Length: 295
Length: 264
Image (tube, rainbow over all chains, first blue to last red; front, side, top):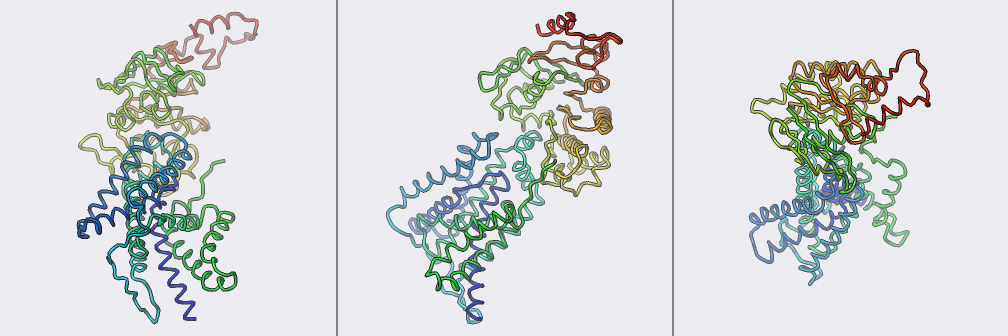
């Protein structure tokens, strides 16, 4: 019983890290209807910027935060200006393909500067000493990820529901042309959503990096976020918040109880089994929007 | 005062859609633009509102002027801030937002004393039904309600002139009449000029002060709405009236000749 409980709790906190990663993709999807395949790479690159600032140049953390923020704003604006702006009014699929290309480009860029070593260790921002709670060992980073995803969830839910910018983002996602006709600046909305998503990505990346080190292939975490996004529903922030821990728990339960029978690997496969099942049974996820169609 | 002076619109750098089009909407007037499908009416409206450039279209010659400002090839957001708002064809709502969110997101402060709250109240006053629906998801509203939301959304932009692209499309005659009444009262009470594109020529000419007829990317006829209504060609081609009692025949050369003159 104790083992079961520990597995579940570990699953929940690990899953909340998936939520955090998925959140960035959902924000871009919610505001532009573009599925960002480059999210993992943005996360990776941002983490390397944080590492370079903290370790390579030895800049203190209170100064690193604004540097990383500035980088996020720069990267988000550049993506909007160079890649998304020429695509306004084009089919959404073309934009999605552009993000695939962006991902490949960023991987290359990362390799150029940080390809020398296998992994780069971030200093202990949060202590690596696990917390012992009711005879269970939990990593502090995971708990921080859990709290951070709760905080982001609250902030962005309010942002999308009540602020003018949040509403404008949803309007643009809904219908680019109609949004422009009412005078919404699609450029601003695109830039804003890419900047916000980049900030969220880097936050997740730094957390992840402080656990396992910053590596070039940490971008694969975005692939782990896909089942979370599909389960939660593509444009639902609350969906992602719930689906992350759900996927995490299933992953860890599968790892604990199925692995002995199948000889390992169940842990990695379980989330994608969910992904396929969800796509078959409920394509719009748990909380996603059902397409409004007038007949 | 909106002035379209001899513009030429080219799509994709090769397809010439409009040529030598002129049009004027004087202050305090309703002007209607009639024409068959594909004549270029929507393209003209999009040229004015700046919506062309996302569709690979461009004004290559002539200019468009609004209250003395040159707005040719400006972006839609700049043009909206100058007081020109287009209501797109086909009720393009933000389906997933509620009615009230649809309105709120379209609020644009153009003058210092603008208040989004007051504007919202005004829209609810004009469309009492919308106040009851304000928490509903707009995608599930009926066609007539959606058209009202779209017009209300344009009003939130605090325009001086509204470009309406076929507001009666797909609506029953009764609802169409309601929509036209609202447009008239917007014109009267809010002092907003109207440029109306319509298929329903009878109603459009009844409401308008002045009319333009477009064919194949050109203005072929213009005049006071009352004069246009009496015009034999308009009667036959747009109002569906021909000389009473006479049978029409394809041997009737007159029909062909008259049509020919228009295409010149």
